[in-house]
Length: 525
Image 1 (cartoon, rainbow, N blue to C red):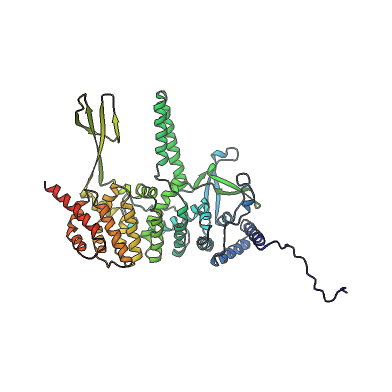
Image 2: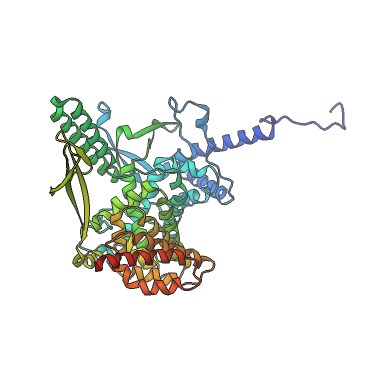
């Protein structure tokens, strides 16, 4: 019998009330910790429950990866498994393939990806839905294991699909498609692969690729040259050191391309369900990652025929090409092997001799591969002049046998979707800014100039205005190269007709026509 019958007794809860902010943090912290425990437990039912919960949260746009148990510890001394680590760990594992516990530096680990259609689709959907929430895109971009796993899934899928294309049967050694008969093919559908492309379109802004695949080699050579200048007695040792460093770098790049990593590239995180720790990648292997990413994007624009899929891969490529460093990487990895077959470079050295009367005489010497200007003890200055020439009889045959990014973008200029046309033009415009050889290569693709002139005649309103402006800019860049003018001058009359209309780009077209006139006058002299 209670002493006061009209009194309502309130029972204390197990979790005391602090504030809305602190209670929300405790709830998120507890929920994330429990999900991490479930996904690292290797219990299929718990993993399935966790994935369904995260998938529902991601669809509701309420999933944040920033809640982590790692924030309360010093990550350098006590690195624990985060929510993203446990999520990608459901489908990935690292298998030790070489070395023993006594010689850790000799150990090598292979990244294994579980080939389960349902799990792959769920996890990729979670990442794809969550990138719309800040700062999830940055967190995903900063997790090397996630980035490498997504790229490997997409790369193997596109390799498999491209094997059905007649383009991949090219006998040329420069074909962008690798015939990997031993390549593991993941059971995903085209929509899942499109989701991966959408993820990359968001996270690539936070990933900085190396300027060139052989950057480390150049740096090693520069270091070797400095040692040689400082100590002539150690020239041979410096050369051997540089060669060894280059060889080791190339070997590591080949292993990373096959998803095999050295011991110092792997980090072991503290986990309740794994005494030895949960292995993850410390950082992205930039050289192999950049090469595989570009090959994947190049395959994607040939493999996909659906408009949404094409837009996804073109948008990803357009984002990458915003950076000048990435444009150089595109050129070096994908396009240089093609234009080197028909564009030859001749470097002529001219020596300027200075006498006491300040008179100069020019004496051309033999062709050399050295660049720059040098001055010797005889008061003479050496200047290198680079001349480019084209083997026109080889161009069409080489282009036909080497399907690549440029040929596909030229083809997409005739697409019915204006957004696809616009993105293809943007990619070609940014590539034309990259280098002199690339401008020459782009201009010599069949029907490319005809496409640009046709796009100039579009209605100058809305999206057509932007397409017309980009077409003029591309022609202006291409007209800077004397080797391109013989291909551009036949369209002089068509450009003049456009310039006489009310086209807003008439001034730019007039400048191009003036350049044509100067070239023709110089040829007639």
